[in-house]
Image (cartoon, rainbow, N blue to C red; front, side, top):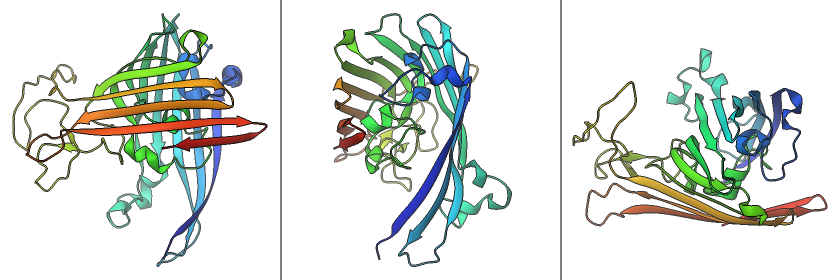
Amino acid sequence: MKKNLIALAVAAAVLVPGVAFAADSDTSSKVFLPENSQDTGPILYGFAQITGSQQFGSSGNEGLIFGAHRIRLGVKGTAVPGVTYNFQYKWDGAWMSGGSLQGASKFFPGVEGESGVQDAEINFAFIPEVQLKVGKFRVPVGMERTQFGGDDLWFIQRSMNQSIGADRSAGVMFHSPNVMGTGIYYSAGIFDNHSLDGNNAFTLFGNNPLGSEYANVGVPFGGPSVLGGSYAQTRVGGVLTNGTGKYLFAGMVGYKLNPLLNVELSGARADTLDSAPGYAKQIDSWNVGARGGMMGLKYMARI
């Protein structure tokens, strides 16, 4: 029987100081785009999304369940003129990660929390048309994923097409939000050959597609492997020093005419395992999006 889900979320924002996010922005959450902010900081920010959900028409017990889904805290600012930074930590579902629910996911998949560094990025904007971002941040695929922060979504959850994107990864990216005032924007980056977030096409990696572990992308780093093979790798102070020559490439180009129309084309590709005849050599993902609004009505479409 088809399941239905009704959920209500209340997002509470913690902003210090409160005027830090007063600047106008109609492209995305001000919190998640420090390179567009005129505030020097450091600025402390965060939010929490409190949910209440219930399914109908399932085969089991049904009832209302409460939770705290997105819990974020970060700091952003301008280090020196033209150089901005953003560091954000997450405790998503962390209310389930301790106490009586510790280990509950063994019996009830999905009942678990996770915490860790969500974003750690530095942006160099000495030339506005050719900015450089380095660190861990969002791979430029998908309008909703890249232009909306978690506290600025139209719905409680993101759309299903995020599963074909790459979410976040570590790498470098050239970009500009508005090339010479024309309304054209672009991003082009190279990343480690995997996504650091789960549940998408670029997540799982390995080197044995016929083994017990299913994998999508090739291993991004060199070194001795329990799956076989040994590659040069020397850790220096915890820093990995050698990769495998496999990368995730991603790019986006778009045009914002006015608040009525914003269109984008984006895509990504990554090297696959490439370890057996007949298997695909790479994973490709494409996205076309459009959004806008007029007189209080908003629309968004993605393919």
